[in-house]
Amino acid sequence: MFSLVYVISLLKKYTVVLFFLISSFITVLIVWKGPTLGILFFLMSVGIPVALVCFISKKWALLIIVGLSSFGSFFSRIVGRDLPMGSLIDILLLCTALGIIILGKHTKIHNDFFKNPVNIAIFIWILYFILQAFNPEGSLNAWVAGFRGLITFMVSYFILFETLDSLSFIKRFTQFWLAICVLGAIYCFYQEIFGLPPYDLRWVTANEIRKGLNWIQGDWRKWSFFSDVALFGMIMAFGAIFCFVLSTGPYSLKRRMLLIGCGLMMIMSMIFSGTRGAYAMIPAGFIFFVLATLNNKRTLTVAIVALTGMLLVIFGPFYSGPINRIRSTFEPSDDPSMIVREENRQAILPYVYENPMGGGVRTSGTFGERFAPDHPLAGYPPDSAYFETTLETGWIGLIIQLGLYCCVLLVGIRNYYRALDKEIKVIYLAYLSAFFALTIAAFVKKAVEQFPLGFIVGSIYILMPNLIKFDYKTSKKNNDSPQ
Image (cartoon, rainbow, N blue to C red; front, side):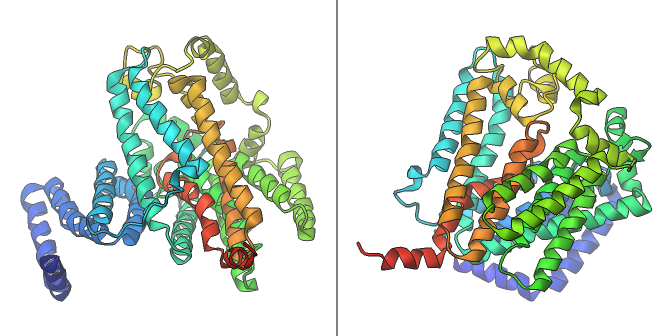
């Protein structure tokens, strides 16, 4: 430990010299061997110190990992190469988990850990995933590919559980991902006003399939610096719902106006993304908010204004590409793409009925084509998180997934009504409203647990049962009550 501290002190002392030498060496490599080797050395020279920071500080690690998962695709598009950001994030997750264990900076897991229904539901899902390795319809190669995702989730959940251990850091983490959402909205406006930069245009036109998905009604859909339009639209809708609900909390007028402004920016960005699942999230989150606060007099006024605005968008005399796409979300029977999706689902339903455990993990879509090309589901586009679960793990897996979501919502609602501190109550309500909207979006989209949104969803699994522990008014009331 002494040597590690000594090395860190030297790095701090000679930072300028160190970066000068590194930059000079990278320049020589690029001139001598081309950009590939220079980029590789740059990633190593930056990656090693970052990994060291993640090993030492779990809180900084979480913020770094969320930031990298948000901007990783953007870096790849600028460079013009597919950078191994997924592998880099896995390495940083591993470094963080090892640092928590080795340095002894872990929270003591209390005896009531498995009394929490959310943890029990997650544990059941993990066991069922492992059982899928013996699914006679599945492919072992595809299961092994999916097992990496399970390990990533388990390590992420462990880190979130250990890191979200104080109300101050919970607020900091929330502010951090909200700031990323605001930056995403700002960059989306840049794309919309000034057009796509050369690196974005090069990426979106690299193949005909990607071009066809993103060019709609004479304009490009927008994805900001995220990996795709679906993820961008859903994280914008999630952030907008969160900001609007949080603006009803016990904050100053200036902060409320700031939250509302950020929410409106995210709404506009979501519209530019052209993501139908995101469009459906807004009314879903709003309905949850209204039902949870029905006894509040201001809720009725907000509900009337919001309902009027929604009816104007759907039935008003306004016509444009984004507006028409919003309307098609609520009129699926008239949309050609939705009709094709429904026909595909009807064609595959007999297979679903015959296999209650599904066709096996990672056997559908592009993963199936890659890891199980001879499987009946290989290449089939599930198009929704729930239908993908049903295809690959059967109706049993779907019940387990829905059970997990129900546990999260029920535990969160129970603790929301138990909480006495107004700020904690509104944080509960903001996360619950946005999470409920995500569960609705899962009917039509698959990006629900894609990073960085997956980290936020994982934090909700932690916060719903544990945020109440930081409600000092509730704690004081319990301690003062007669035994």
